[in-house]
Image (cartoon, rainbow over all chains, first blue to last red; front, side):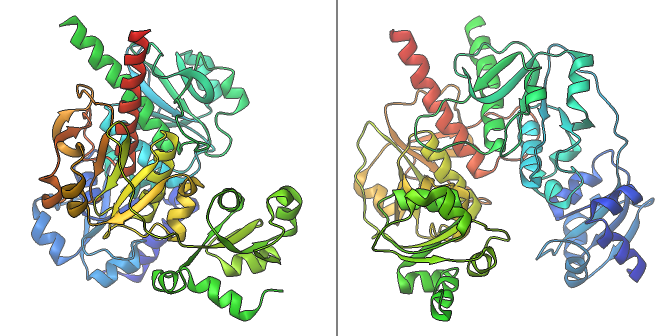
Length: 255
Length: 255
């Protein structure tokens, strides 16, 4: 039986302030919930319908998690989905721990990416292209926002992320930074090395002036028509694809 | 002065039923409105704020369009934007006229793409990559939905679109069709010719069985990590990029 207090607690996690206070977040839907249950996140609450229980019973933990079998209506009332007939899970926020970048690996850095849908989609793209590290400027969207997690389709469990002051981080670690600008070297001609940072900027203003000064290579996606710009998640996917494509072509030549 | 009836008329256009009845649609925001005013669409009403008038006065037509200078509040009340301090324009829906495909040009076809944001983003991508023809299955989202037009960022004025029964259309015109599947030839290895159809499927189910049978080349975006899939707009952009990149590399070799 879901108490009023538990319901209130879950609902409060829609707001960043309370997520921070409680060091907790939630995800909804069978895809994100089953991914969360298989990850190293510490799950504290699981709300699920009879339908979820029959389809995914082997995902439901035996102990350590407060379990609530609820109706679809109760589930929809607790979360943000208009329609949810499967599950909702609450977990603890992870500590914000920096990671090291090896010179032969790729990471993505986001300078003030504000839209939750974009951040979530970028997580999914990073996961698809096997890029498992994401640096996020402190001004960017909160990764624990339900809209981010939903758009990530479970990929938030597989990509390591670190919120930081990018300028200070880059000053210290001094990586090779490929920055996406409207006026840069055509990505089709760029010789991408073995690794580095793919830096993407704000939806309206692009990469900020102060971070732009740290960029080693300014790169651009060539335009063939008349659209003014591309969405930042689309641009990220195209750059990741160009890097993997170049590796693929080079490894074919070596064979 | 905006009459109650005009306001009611504009508001009704949020629904497909009334757009069809009135053969009219609207767009919001300075980007889409100025693009619309520069296009060959027949604009019937223009609502604009003082701010829009001072910034974009040369876009405001002298005749043929019912002009209304309104407050920001009136504008927001008429449209779907939470915040709109610029403009809203109503225009006539274009006739649904088929176009011919030349063998040396590219077009995109959408088989049951339901999400308005995806359709709008695909318009923007097509426009970016200079692909100016879009075939849309009758089950797909309505291009005149305000969410589609908003996501297209003005590109709906530059890409020709035709709603049709794809199966019948392909049977008649018999084009080369590159269909995006999860299991197909790696796009990095595909030898794209001079033109053809880039066929994308439904968000959940991909390309339908009956249209799939008409595909000449099944193609796939290679996966390096663990995300289950890519969003359909992202996948479209990556395929377009691979085609343009291949042309770029080939033309460099010929030089």
